[in-house]
Image (cartoon, rainbow, N blue to C red; front, side):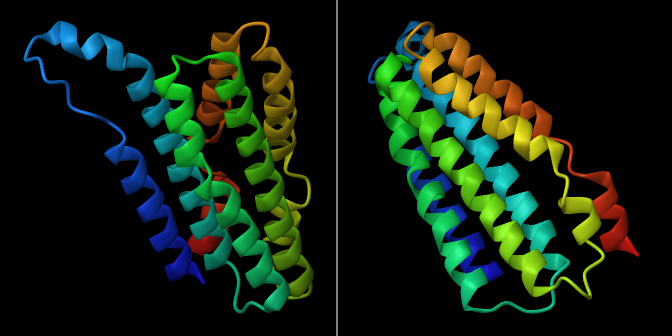
Length: 186
């Protein structure tokens, strides 16, 4: 499951980078119109890298999976697979309200899907997992979902503020949960 998920995330990142079109002009000014596309790509790359890291840590702490976990993982991958589309639409349209709102909706659904995967794994490994106490009260996940939910309607008021909120959520996740890393290193 981990290798398959790693492969899917690698493909998603590859798909996104293919949307970065090279300008036909050799001046630096030719890059300016690509700024929203590049910013969208960077933001989405960071989100996919965060999901990959957290997915990796989560699975390192688990010994086995069942059908419920496999379906929960497929559910997560479904939402992650929409990130390149939402990224391209948002970037190509200069952070217009509808694309920014859709991007937030995809991030919200991916966050919910990751939470479902965590719950499925914790249910399966409830007795033997040292990870359960670390994941049961995951404040960052709750804050992320609240921020995504707020950013979707905010996109129709100020789409750049929504983009900033997405960036702040990504910054919140750049540092992995140190308690999980310490537990895995034991």
